[in-house]
Length: 430
Ligand SMILES: *Cc1c(COP(=O)(O)O)cnc(C)c1O
Image (cartoon, rainbow, N blue to C red; front, side):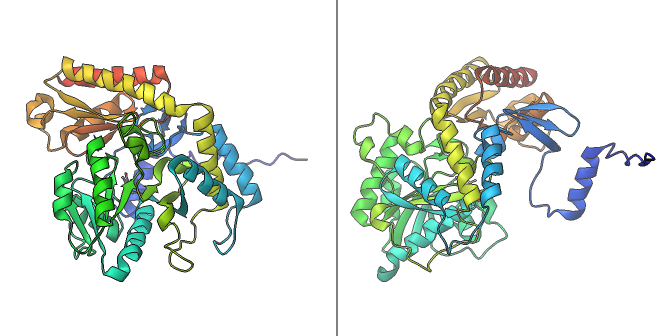
């Protein structure tokens, strides 16, 4: 048989970077401020761009890829479950959704779960739960914290305590008011006859890596009990073992008198829940678990067998490999190193923030760092860009905070590489 002469394909892209950028600028809504990086694949704690350059990923897709990239257990769960069943409607039952709900309940407390597809949507469910709870009495108002972040839907931006997400989208969805974070007296003073719930992050993420104090959490619980309010925790970013415990309030209240009895009435989850596969959820405490009855709340893709099989696998790997302990121990080491950098280079670093694997390096004001002062970019952004140049990914938060949200299975030598590269950037601007 004659060998067919196949013309060689056009060189795929000699400059894939420009090619992809062009596709975006022509076809993708420019709603994100993106860095000039185009990634093609990942392995473990590393990502590779289209030119083959390697980056240590200390951002993990903003606290999403909790097992790093291309984890074989996730691949296997995706492949095996997709051969059996990807989706049926929530008109029917499937085993993975029931099992995942049971695993979440086991890690939190008596209650039930609803499955969605994102953090914003998980919070939306909690908002509806609160409105249902207060409806007969005409109560609907939800208090959230200044500097909080709760998602980008219309109710999400109303709940979020940051003006920059609200601007241009007025009128705001009614029923949300903000109170200063970690201030129990302010919460008490803010309650009106219409108030029905309080929603808080255990560790504010987007707002700059600020953990709630134990006194604040216990105070809010007592206040909510007294005033018949629901207490909700947004665990979308700080949850899923990132602090060393399943939920951040469990870590914050460890060894605190009365802390072991603390439970909120609702918890939203997403980000790490699927290890990169989209899934969100909320848990609601037992007395309120049947408030949203048949027909009151739904989403087509919520809790598909595929998403739930992956989420179950993620939990299994974390448990088997004791990644909770890993995040706690390595997180403590990381924090001490960041504190050392703050002590060694006070002209660049103000302080270290956070706990476990939700950490922040707070830089001094841009004007005080000569290498940064001239640019109109924030100090955080300029620092993150310099880390990109030497192959490390981190996430800016606010104007002065460089956020670290590594995969829970980050290796000690990778943590070491991260710290030495961070120190390299600090030295270069000090
Ligand atoms: C990311 C985030 C959300 C929103 O989650 P999406 O999946 O982007 O909708 C909500 N709350 C917190 C605390 C988050 O970090």
